[in-house]
Length: 354
Image 1 (cartoon, helix red, strand yellow):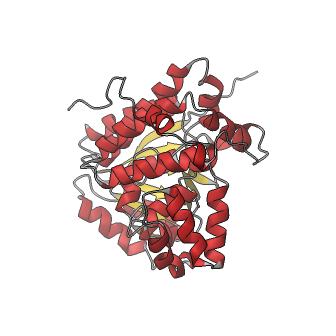
Image 2: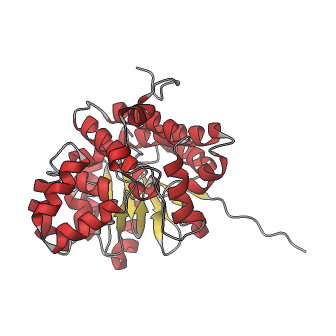
């Protein structure tokens, strides 16, 4: 019997002057594991050093999305007994996020379908970010007892007003228009035109510049449709401007609107410890000078997550048992400064050399 070759989880190839990185773990919605992160890192190095490659493009195989995030099932299963595995995954992932942000060639992300968590990390740090009518983007981590990572505490504070605070705390998924508004994406291209876009990009010469890439995308891009969230931006700015979760909840209660009540219900379903940690990190990110500073802070917090019972309970409810009914260990009034301090320890090797 002839053995069938197993398809790689990341397909790396050159197509014209574009180096392509195609995530190919379709059964897991292209969620990232350590081997995939390493293949992406190797591809970035290969394409950076190849003078025939003008730009890099990342896409997701399958019909459902670019990437649903990191492989939290692996971290759940290894975290208590083999915490070094989760720590190593986050370390290598965050370093790749930084590389993408500083990449010397145009980095094009096709953010079609589901783009969540780690999927945001390998796309929103790029120089050219394309969304479609199927894009569903989110940093949903407060719903699993975690916090927005992969540099989100740098990205979200750069959204207009308090929109990033809203996204980080609620974990709400958004479409293309809101992703562009949040400065997490740049261009809207309908899925029916994606093949045209890819053909145009791969036809660029090897000496193509970032401006050439931008022009090729703009020739295919169209105006993004209106968003239902647009009507609530002022309320979001009012309610999420505070530096404590309690004040944000009080402000939402005072709104006395359907949007305020829906947002309140969403926040009350999230981990209290995660929300407080997330707000701390978002406010620190707002004052930070660089992405790498935020990633270092996030890495410290991820190591604290390996001993956080709410993280394991959140993953259990969302991914393992899928009952969607997490039983959080603490409420808002139970979160102490000592608990929050566990996520700020720097007792580890830094990600980046100063």
